[in-house]
Length: 106
Image (cartoon, rainbow, N blue to C red; front, side, top):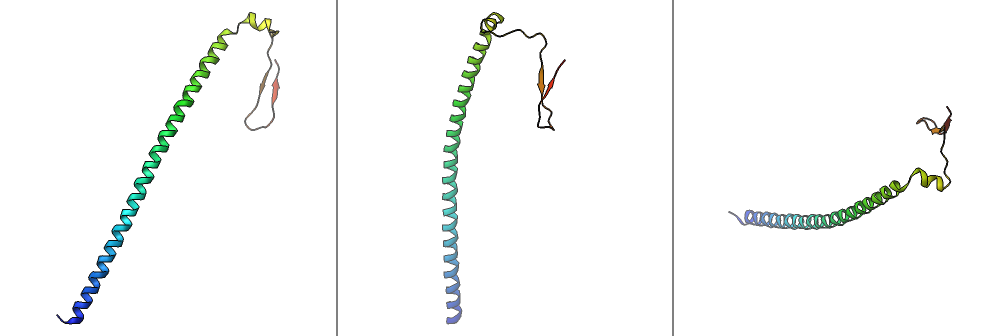
C-alpha cells in the first residue's frame, strides 16, 4: 500500500471513530433526558392521584352530610319553617334549541 492510501484510510477511521463517539453521546444524552422525564412524570402522577383521593374523600363526606340533612327534613319541619303545601305545581322547562324559559301551567 502506498502512503496516500494509508493516509486516506487513517482519515476515514478518524471520521468514523468521531462519528460513532458523537452518536453514542447523543444517544446517551437522549436516554438520560427521557429517563429523567419519566421519573418526573411518575412523581407528578403520584401527586395527582393523592389529590384525587383527597377530593373523593371530601365528596364522600359531603354526600354523607347531604344525606343526613335530607333525611332530617319532614313535612312537619317544613311547615314550621313556613313552607307551604302546593296543590298544583307549576314547572319551568327549557328546550335545548332556545335560550328562553317557558312556564307550563296545568
